[in-house]
Length: 397
Image 1 (cartoon, rainbow, N blue to C red):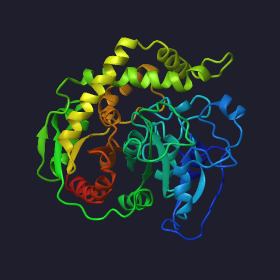
Image 2 (image 1 turned 45 degrees about the vertical axis):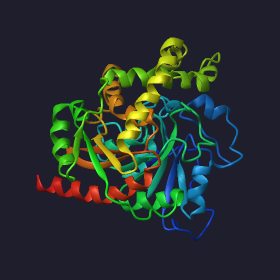
Image 3 (image 1 turned 90 degrees about the vertical axis):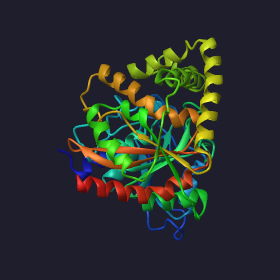
């Protein structure tokens, strides 16, 4: 249906660098990478997936530290990648610039908002790609495109030089086709991984009740095959309690960062983004204040549960990627159900990694691991081992 040039054209923006290398030698000098078009690269515009921003923006005067770290490790930047408009999306569908292609399921969306980053990595157009994750924007594309994808601990990596969408949630992450590459990139940001003691695996049994039946029936046995794990109840307060905590906080952040810009007279916005910004202007202060307290209680409970050695296992998304022509109503329903899974790490400010687990109807399906604060290295350490187990389980089925 699509050739490699189609994927390249839909994945990379036209206003980014075609090739940029700052060092010839370094731990990543044999690798190429891409950066989401929310991230500044000196001398180039950041378009944020919006035509007005692309028209009005001046070229960046400095490179975002998260991008600079990879460049200084010797990796070669081969372009900036398309994103959902101002990162407001879970599917990668941008009415202004089009939808990047999911190379592993071409009739379905790639996931967003780090859509272009996932697309070009899955197509082997680069070795890894940087993205951002607020409510699932690295994890969901990783699951949809069959990639390894890490959302880092909130606040651990600098978000300077990156468009702020929801500052109390925004994190940096990256995607790769294999665990080894994901880990190599991690060592640039975190240093050598070192040794780890035994890991306590905690299976969030009720989280596997959220996906549609075929997903649950595929993922639950896979999760149980990893190692002996304690089965726990994650949503003790109910799923709606978590979602009702996430929504007012994320919307309030959105209004504070992009509200004035989005409401400027004559601003060109897609209907979905315009409606979301309008919604963000009506957050109930009482609900917001209550959500602040609930967030801390949920975080404390999960951090205590995980400690230094615990890792939580749960599905990444609740269903297969929607078809590229799915109606808006189907997208809204999908977002709410998958957000019930992705909001856990977002609210708790914890690192989460997606690992390709299986395939259904020709579509990749991912399984996720969440660790305690600054447990990013433990997740990277586990990713290859667990990926190998899941691959073996899939072959045995």
